[in-house]
Every structure is written in structure tokens, then in C-alpha cells.
Length: 93
Image (tube, rainbow, N blue to C red; front, side, top):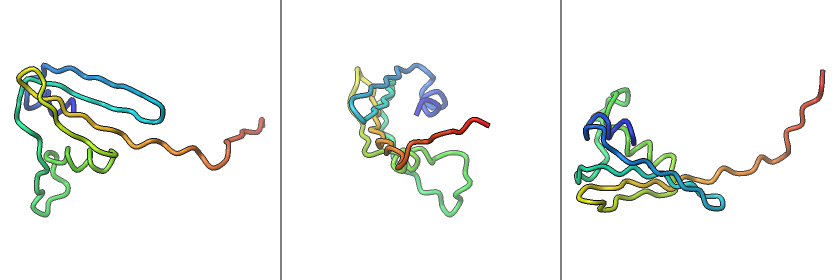
């Protein structure tokens, strides 16, 4: 999200991370009001650009865009990390 703002929006941004219980929200605010959208890769999955929304959708529980001081704020609610099934115990060698 940050690299997208730097590449396309001139680099002026505000990054916020918040954690509550088992949820983490990441948001990036910038001056551009252009709404991000998923781009069709036209059969080229190795393309260096245009995969941001697909990555966000794969890693998040949900995401959205809010109006923010004449620009926008893109936020992502990350999936909670499940507890491991058993504690990891290391044995001294």
C-alpha cells in the first residue's frame, strides 16, 4: 500500500497501524482521491505492477476506502493468526 502511494501519489502519506484483540488494521492516507481497483493481468501473472488489490484481498479479512481530507484512506483488516496447535518446545542439545 505504501509503495503504491510513493510510486503513484508522490509519496506524501500517513500510515496507521492499530491492534485490538486479535485484529490488526493497516491504513494508508494520501492526497489522491482516485479509488484503487483490481486490474486484469491479461494472462501475465508475472507482471510487476497491478497486483496490489489481489494481494490485499488474499491477505485480509476485508478492506475499504474512505474519503480523507480531500484524498482517500485505504484500510485493510488483517486476518487473525491462529494459535499453533501445540506449544513449540525446544530441547537443549
